[in-house]
Amino acid sequence: MNDAAHPAVAGSTLTLFATGMGAANPPVVSGSVAHSMASQPAEPIWSSFDQFNMSLSADPPADAVSTVPGYVSAVFQVRIPVPANVRNMSGVTDANGVLRTGVNLQYQIYSEAYAPPASNRVGVYVK
View 1: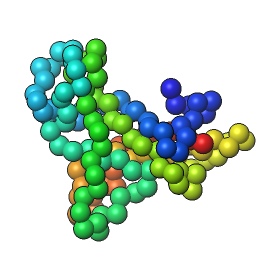
View 2: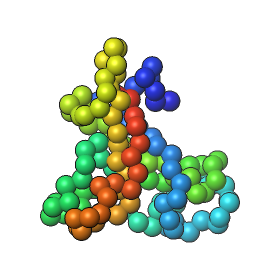
View 3: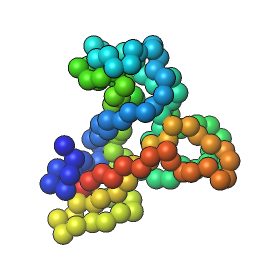
């Protein structure tokens, strides 16, 4: 659970649950229950606590994404390491020193200047 009373700390790993990531590899049957973590989205997923630098000469490393055993096969878990410099990120800090900031999930790296910086943005709490 990640909330103001249970913030993630630098060096820990957040697990986000997401759907709508497109085709899986190996393919899954729609509505079936996953029995392992074997399936992954066919396209890589990237995450960042910062906006992506679209001028990178190479794509950043893809995140670890897999199906969740016991859940519908369309639910994927995205494991995102919390960087050491997370306290320097932008966001809102409460009286207890807990920072609410965002993680960007990117389903495709775009080189076009007009493309959005992330496909989804998720608010997380860190300390």
